[in-house]
Length: 279
Image (cartoon, rainbow, N blue to C red):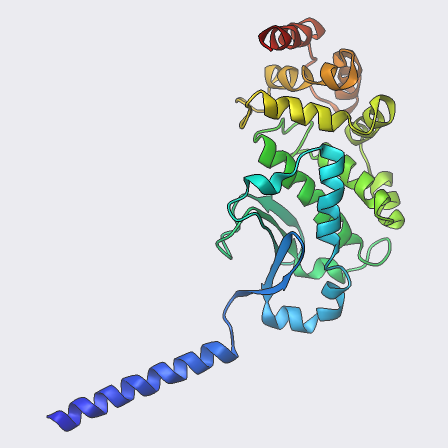
């Protein structure tokens, strides 16, 4: 009887030792492959090893984008993250990208995911897709960390002209002129509106806007989204940043892109006046 028990224990020990060796040699799923200044990169080891030269050529880019956005948007979102780190998932899926509070594939967040092939698929110059996707999604990460639920019809998500516009500025500032030019060529009127507001009212217009929103305690815009009232609340913060009521100017852009409602300048002003009264 004792001999049988010993045999069973030996077989179990052998199985466990083989399992440990197998896991050590062939890690399953996403693993930490690079630790940057702000971003930890996760990828399949086989994917990282195969396309290593492409990824390593841009490992500092997410960190540089982050520093640009702290300057442009005026807020450092790292202080609100669980472990004061951000995460980049080199996604095994082809095409696309995302920003999220929690990346389920690695059990960490907040961070972004970018398709593994974005670094080597060519469009309008080397690294266009990775440059574009990384910058765009880090902008989404910033604005989503500050307050969730931005208007989907003219700010982000369904239409994404705000992150698209800021992404172009970041690309220009970091010397990715080909990527910025290609992005600008496909920019819609809303994207051009956001760029024009920066040009007219100062490069820190969105920093002032977002700081005011955060100081008022917003963490989630209200529903329904999209809606005229939600847009009027968001636009009501622009007088602080721009110095004037921009409802009429924004209405003309809404008409150009087919948004069916128009902002009421008086309601926008009333919201702003009441906000000032409460300060």
